[in-house]
Length: 205
Ligand SMILES: Cc1cc2nc3c(=O)[nH]c(=O)nc-3n(C[C@H](O)[C@H](O)[C@H](O)COP(=O)(O)O)c2cc1C
Image (cartoon, rainbow, N blue to C red; front, side):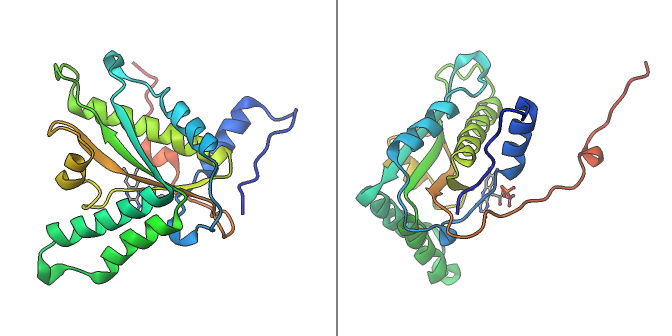
């Protein structure tokens, strides 16, 4: 199933962007079909991610893309990391199995990382915020293309072990894994509590 929200000539740009933002959904690999996403679409997602705001132009987002056989290797590596970092008495076989099956069910896996500025002049939180903006760009672009995705931030993914495996330094951070595929179910609807509950608006002096 794809996400149908094509604009016609009478749709304003604000309507288009509002609809895009409201229809962006987290769709998990269990709901993906077997259809592979074309690499060119993933490149478009990455290219739009690259336009995120960045304090000091550090552009701290880094993406490690795994597809075809490489995605399966990553899935097994994550399951292996899970069994290494989780105390034996609290290990859940289903969690390790899901790391493998999530990879199998996905077309592409994108590890999301923050590359720390050498001078550390920009606060780390701002670099993480910049990467989050990049991921939103990526996810909105996927939505516009009818491509499903989901940002996962489990312990095995955001581990020192995976960070080292990817050649990142101790100051860098893995912020999650973005699973990419096509949804085989109806595009889900979302909900948010009213924005008015989250806004303090002042106009008097
Ligand atoms: C930084 C970040 C990390 C996330 N990590 C997880 C995760 O580990 N597991 C999960 O089920 N969802 C994760 N999510 C997705 C949220 O569950 C999802 O955004 C939320 O349920 C709202 O659904 P929506 O994205 O469709 O609006 C994460 C989202 C963000 C922003």
